[in-house]
Length: 287
Image (cartoon, rainbow, N blue to C red; front, side, top):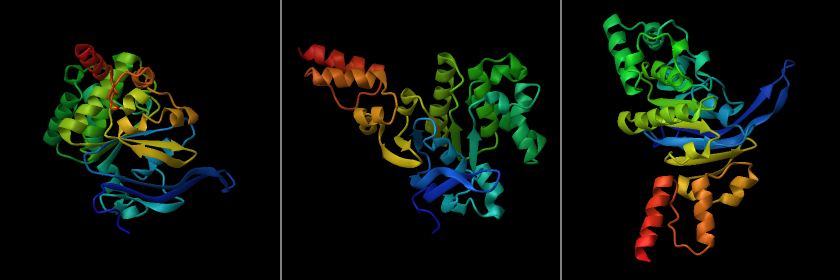
């Protein structure tokens, strides 16, 4: 199988077991997972700690290889060593701690690190660095030392470093977990803009449900399996299931559910505060 022809990334019946020092399997982290991600899609993968979501993320650019099953990226199998470098240029990874990805003395040097390793001409590196910093809103900090930045700014620099490599897909593994609310908002706005304006496919691993509602599709994992997937409005109506899986329900969705229980005729697709305000104002105007 060469992957689903309509899919940019195809995860086909993938299982994965971590092995101990003795080489023996130490439990199944992924269990027969299948998933198709279309080019230009924004997919959020959620689940409690140990659900397998981060393990799945590391399969999407070949950092981990399946124990069984296959992962295809733009028609390339991650098990095929001759395609490993192409796959990692196609799918860029951003991790939880930006300090682990920042390697240079200034912001622009850090963003240039990846393109330099590709052996690109100096003029092209310069233009890619400038473009990447502009895309993440960090141009004015080009000459700043990274240690002087806030957590959200550091993560945006880390994203710029990946963007400068021109990946077609960005996989972000808990990118806001270590950030304050301002940093989280900055990073989420950047991710949404990259998807909407640059057409970059985004896979976001998160345990923040209010981040997942911004995706086109939400995939819910538990014990190494996909247990639910669909548009955010549909997935987040399954409040009992989410609680059973030890996941938070976004407060706005919880409130909407309680108001419906009190016989208020609110639409099903309320996911944000703005949508709630609009719906309540509309109801008031009808009274």
